[in-house]
Length: 162
Image (cartoon, rainbow, N blue to C red):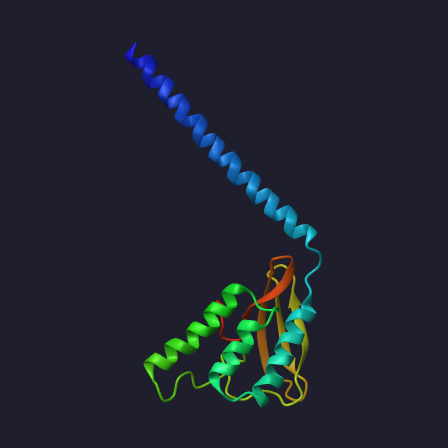
């Protein structure tokens, strides 16, 4: 009788584990299916973002204004906004006078005057490389994700690009 109880308990545990795995597989399949429906990658989101960011860098000189610009831009993912702001805040804590001494999104101190164009795309990883129109050796890598119903920048330059 005791062995029967152990078998019954083992069977119940096995069924519960199976249900959890089925649930995870179903959720994963649904996510993959949703991403396939999300349409082709919208590379223009990244290109317009990086060009608008370049334009903004010429106009807004206060660090907090530039951080707020990124925070309020609908083309950037929630994760990107958090990481970008944290990079600048951590640098400011480490060196109050200097802060971050380069533009993290460009991963450089300087950037092309005439903006960027798409140099290459990688659909498998949702990554593109843009290059300067007037400075063709200047390149920035950007990463896109599908979030909340649209394509968004999730990495650029030194921000969230592993």
